[in-house]
Image (cartoon, rainbow, N blue to C red; front, side):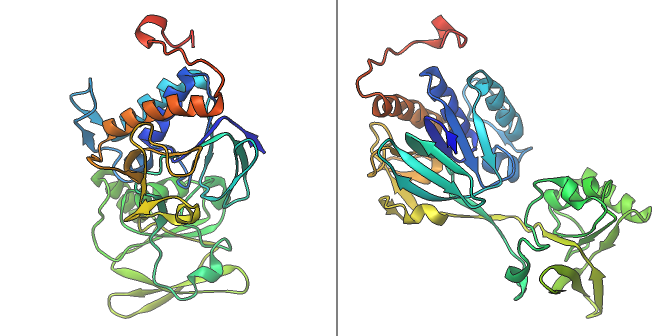
Length: 333
């Protein structure tokens, strides 16, 4: 079981900055995120989008901001569980015990929900048998590329993720097929050009104006049927199918934790962004209060006040002496 002071649910920019604020108070943090990498929406949806309202940065790319936040928290050695959804939270005598969708267990004194718009869940293709093959050949993300080495892999989608993984997995998979319903891609033009070149060279199988039709297998996926715009059908041998149709935010299991929720957002006390459950806080876009602004910089402010309150919750008998980093730096904390 992982032992930590604070478990932060959500590794987006606000969750990452919460590590910094907690680290200044010598509180250890472990972060859990359903996405396979840190950064939340910034990394998954618009990594190259410019952001203009971060103090001190007239303009900063979304992924650059995430990278800078990761550099900022390195001195505090946070730990991570990525690609797993936090499913259960149970109160204990000393804090909370948490369990993820993959069975990872975490013991902590404080829980901080920094889940942005909620738990991002994959948009699934409308195939009636899709659930039967989840975890048995169907996956909605690539956590370990080596899983696909020397395998027949079918990717579906037309965005950056579909293009990027087609390019990367073409280097190790036995056969890669990319299925896309349109003739053009939504992703970066450079990536699209690389995919077209791979298809021209015969290194991948590119099926445009095509859709997934059905899946077959006996306990494990072994083939995928694809239909073309002309109603033609093609049966493709497949060890894996990876639909990459994007993500949709949902509150997920958080809705069952006994928190006060209004319109899919968690109500908090603006003194410290605590919830109605002692020891559980909510910061960033996931929370709601009068005057709430959904800005990253507001989430940073919430993280700072949360950390101060979390320290008092964990150490009620200790005196908290606030220090300024401009005087003490980081190494002295």
